[in-house]
Image (cartoon, rainbow, N blue to C red; front, side, top):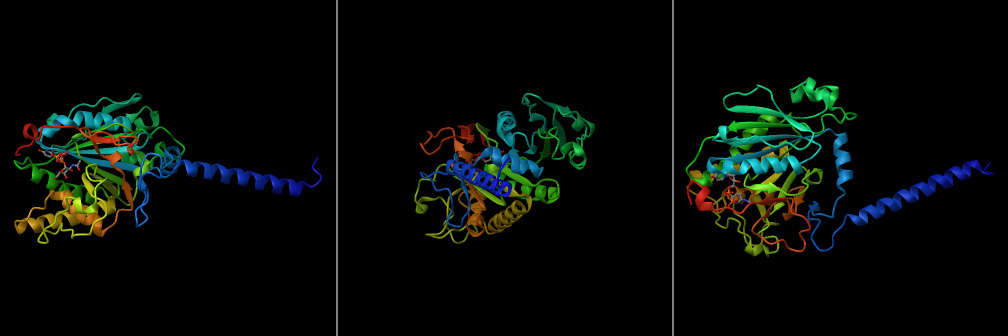
Length: 355
Ligand code: UD2
């Protein structure tokens, strides 16, 4: 029996706290990099492998029962990239979370069937409309099979915190978009369709990512990437001086960035955030692009130039390193410890409608 029970309890509690603090500090030290910039000057995290704890982050977002969506455009011959894009997303993109993929294409009949991860299956649900076909990918949890509507499913207990049965639920929606004979227009009009989609779905999803289809996932892309407004640093310029960035330099364009201005050079091929933030971004980029077009101005890199202007004025709250959009033809630099998502090498002349 302890001589001073109160004291013993206090000492035990204090030791436990010290131990917890030490453990936490230990983990924190494990989550830092000194060879790369991991905090922007406006205090947004720059996410690199080794700067976060995936299990901790996943557990935080699991408690919030979040819903993630993604858009991908496959117009004309770009449908050939869909299979790999979707199948690798199934393996690496927000694994264990509810994901809704929106495919925009002028060839809905070319959307391939997708090989599911072990334990998942594709269920047709008959909700298809001429311009919007849907299919469900549902985990093996029996409760989820009770309801095919994700919105209903969300309201039922099957997706509650205590249940794992809905953690692997995913949905795919195919939307028809017009063809075009100019790749610049295909690329640039994405903002218009994204804006419309986001305005329709504001209540349904928490986060959205807008991704290039001619790419594959190779490693985890998960909760560490979530934020209000999220931008990805372009793999082609992240080692360069700002003066070399291919921003739009003509003041007559609304995408203009002046000498000495700009932070990072961001990719047009991957960006995201909350639906509200992405709606603001898409609306602004679209209206600036259209206003430029009325004056016969096309920014150097179309929507990518407008996106860079937007991110310069409205700083992203999270910046993703080039691990989140590498390019297959580029050799991996030493600071790139993992390639999570990468653009495939392609023959532009063979796949674009114009060169
Ligand atoms: C870069 C950007 C891209 C965009 C473009 C300039 C990266 C990695 N990529 O890519 O996002 O900013 O420059 O506008 O940052 N698409 C079709 N059909 C077509 C042409 C394009 O569906 O015929 C779609 C498709 O989703 C493709 C995307 O537009 O992934 C971008 O076009 P791209 O891949 O030809 O442009 P690229 O690789 O030069």
